[in-house]
Image (cartoon, rainbow, N blue to C red; front, side, top):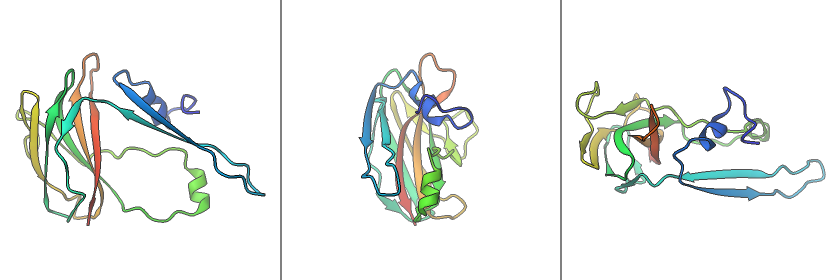
Length: 171
């Protein structure tokens, strides 16, 4: 099913085909049949790319507070950036809304912080494999789930790629 996705809605397919993934976990759940519905199996996939070790993050913050992000890249990854994205807080969905969804996008960062030499509001400190930055957490003062992404350069890939992603609650 994931390999049969078609552009522009082929995020799962693109992700599966990325050459830098090292490990994957797959989950399958079979719902119980109801008298009026044929159960559709549910699938999940989790790709694990051991390209860094990262310091822990708080579980939650308040809008405008500062967040320190740091860690160490693991070869062959060369850490190049830290991004922040935001999505609205979750809300209950109707059955019809849930049944229309087949995938979800990873939010695009509203800000990416790069090392010195790039145009960036706060430079990312990169010394060898170590990186660190402290940034304000505020997407126009809005609360939500904020996603902190770690970006790196990998051999054979012309683009920067996301190698880490964490989510925290910002109220």
